[in-house]
Length: 580
Image (cartoon, rainbow, N blue to C red; front, side, top):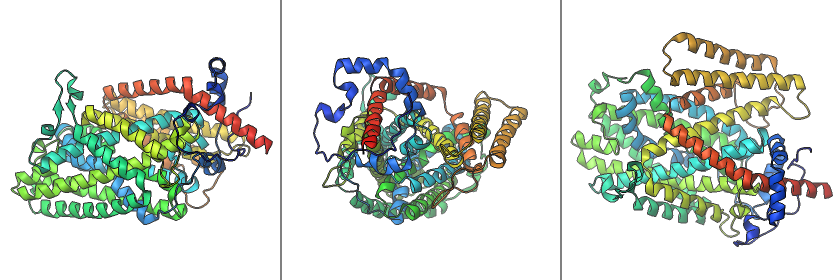
């Protein structure tokens, strides 16, 4: 049976009001009776093959799929909004909390370079995201990009991990919000948490304040995207002013002797910290989901995303340098490093400004994340991989209320129980995995067009991508295994360089970007693949176990529900197109 394309058109979109009937959650043919469901399960193999091989189209994502929400999102964002959304989405718990944790445990003052490594990786991913966001400006972000280039199945696995990323990221930031709020009131962070001794130590400090903060963010996110944007850039401007204060005031108490033992844990500690600190750059992918609401995506997205990431990286490096010049790394507090550092140099009053700034930053991170994650879930629901009830856009507010509430309820539950160290490691795995897939998708987009690319060039492309991935994984695995000899790295790096060079020299590009494109293709996306995979090799084993468990749960859901719902939807869409 041939694959079912969703680019053939579709029926007239139905304008629906919000309800909670079975048809809102499982309207597909496979779920109309137990007999139908049994038949669908028997066809799982055939349906999986169809979904693995099928590809969506740019036009389909921009028209038919988007129309399934019933109402349009309002296009009222500019590049200025995107820059401040980017800053608001990124600068938060990462710099204000994880800096202390990683300095003490993994890297020492070399955390400054860890931020540079993470920043380079994030910037490479920003370029890849930007080209997609300009050409496919829809709320689905990387989910939509992967559906177009790598197919439904890969897109679903990525989507599940992106949703996990959003939930964990929001939970981590909200718990950090409690920590700095406690500092502001001269309390230890755990003073405002409930200690449940019967639970595992990593899940025993219950955080009701984090839940309240998430609930307030939820209310703000469902009311208006433009109003959220105005609040965000005002709050972000105040936040940047506080960051400038921290740098200037902190440098007045600088002691260069604190940098004398710059890398006490060696290069391995530097990269281990980079993998965790990548958490500090998470957020720009949420901003890319707002492309559907920009007035001029070709201008607004590149200026907004690249500008925001540049400002963020510079701020992070300056803040980390200031912290280490103020206090020796061994004395840095892992929960509230900047506040405690100011207290240690005799500027007790400054710790309140720092705590206030951290709270402002975390609030905007939570707000932008809430806006982004809801739009992401909305687009997934448009494909019926999750219930279409989650795709509904409210006719008055122009926002996806159902998706917003569901995502933030999940975030609140995780935030209530789980400690930050577990959250940050698991978050980095999901994020690095997704960014790697987007870079692969960009190579496919540039070098392969169905019906135009010859079989020979397609096979060359496939071989090059396999070698790029294999050499990157080998480098990361050798590093993770504690390899010390240089020969292993030389072999894997030469293979990566040769595969990328072969792609550049021997395979003609099949598609040129229409308005804005990533420079230095294939080198830049190939480098993004390599560095993301390398950072994955620096993350601890238990986090990979949790990642594996989550992926298994995703597959169980997909084979029982998501596969059959999306197959039926694609089949109905193709039938409607054929009948027009």
